[in-house]
Length: 160
Image 1: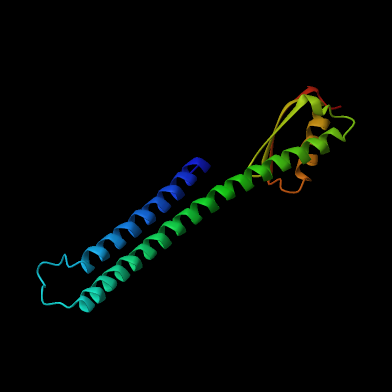
Image 2: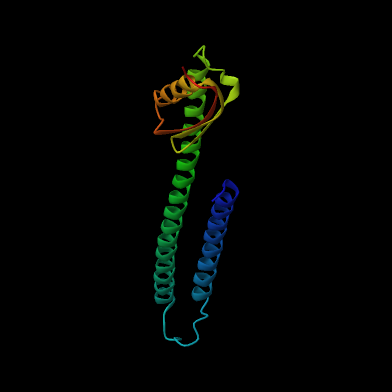
């Protein structure tokens, strides 16, 4: 669920709560004014008690629905937050791997692309030789947060 969808859901929730409140007040007022045709022997106090009981029941139902909607929104927000955190974590891993590769004199970090998804790093591009290619894997694995490395670097010259 996107931020816009989340905001829309929250807006609908508040609009629904406002509408139910207005309906509760209206039905209570109608009951107090004697709109109950079938029970003309009720006193105004009894009508008030019945209207209040009805309003309390509707309010309890609204609270339960609001809690459920709030829990769904909270779950959705947690999932979105988790995705954002994972993306930020992957970006951090990518940056740290690039720094490690740039610190190695034998590797030309500008010729190596680093992509990270769920802690799995993919290296693409070229390395000067097979030894440098293998060193790139070792360096990437040494970075915190890296779970695996898929080294697709092409070695320009074989190791001797």
